[in-house]
View 1 (spheres, rainbow, N blue to C red):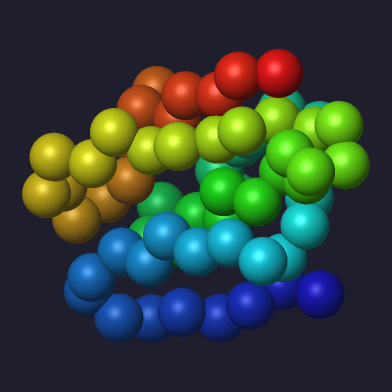
View 2: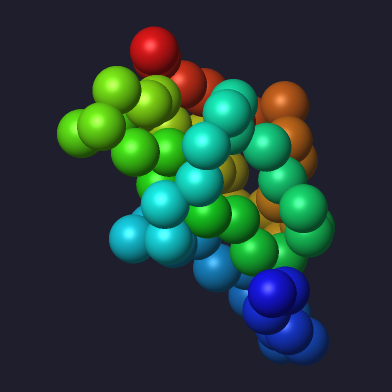
Length: 62
């Protein structure tokens, strides 16, 4: 399932558990939940106020 989001401001969210390495699928919304409690990654985004999210600003720790 893909969520639709057509607003100007970016949204960063969690509690939608993903697997693998943190990655973006859209320039306006980003899930940072990579199941750290289940052996996944702790992920974060280094936001500087940009309207289009930059995949190079995703950081994570295994």
